[in-house]
Length: 515
Image: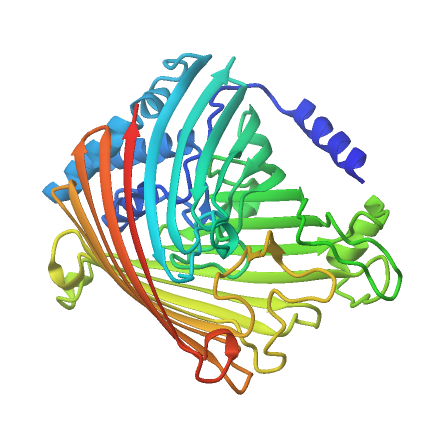
């Protein structure tokens, strides 16, 4: 099957017409995305498809060039103007390349694009999530990482992120200090026209959610993958152009995971190293309305020889094949995002409001059943305070029909190295998240957040977790950022054991340098 996939990729690549703009991705946890939301809410960007991340730096340049053009035509707030100016400085080469094709060098290397070091202290087994599978343990933890990126002949681009990690009590064991070095991310891209193949290790986020996503988030560690996509939003031909700007992502991965050593009891097949297939479509039929459709399939394994024909039977026949070589675990979802600008004309609640949601289904059925959902609302310039954002988000992952169906499966659980790669709350759970955030003068920022999470809802001793977050950040210079955070966590019925309580603390500090 792997040979067939590579042949298909090479065939498609040879059909493409060469053009410019090979470019690496912007990290999923970058402030670029929250800043972009502000520009979108101001009506400066209308061709974005912001529910699928990461973006390429080239796409960021296109969107910022659009924002600059719109800002010249309309009056915008001083804070938005300052933010646009700040973002434009960071992506000046990409913006220039949009305005004057070929203005940027075809080949370049940035040996150190960014460097960061952070220290985290945990008092107790504090819950860590949405950090690309990086584990911290009770006690002292430190991490240093840097990024390098480059481009070759305007056709290839590459990115490497080495990481050094120290844990005082690795896996929670006293005296088990450990220092690790690994390539956390690293990939090579081939780009021709608006067609891109990425091969290597990277993270994805599919869906408009801020605190979580039903199918794909950065909760687990980055996948080793092949991803095929059109990095630049484009219009489809013929009547499909009415769907508006369009993007797709096609994902193939093999989860080489030491913790996924599963043997099928019925067949005796070795199910380690299963395949992961994903497909996502994004449309924007109206400048204020975005739609996403996506599908994940986990199947195969070391002891199962799956042909290309078998793959289509698994992925698209919608049948249960438990105990056979064509067994799989599948998830489907549709998501919507709707931005309402100029709300202040009607009510002094916010300058603009974004409503978003996801509806997903696990396993088979016509239509697929065992549904979960996520819903959220974001108020920009909340209560008419400039730069303030109020967000609330709720996810329910405990379907009434089969409460324990999401992410769990006897052969193919949707996990990688022990972490769900969908919503971090996991199986048979729900999660309520509220955050108030503000940036002042584009230099000082703060976040105050609350999260209530229930796990094992269908069990008699449901675990209830309450988390309280406080984070502050300050731009010491254009190239130097400092952030400090503190979180408190209180859990009842810990690990679903009656009256078992746990109180945990998290303290962190990060220094980030951009070159």
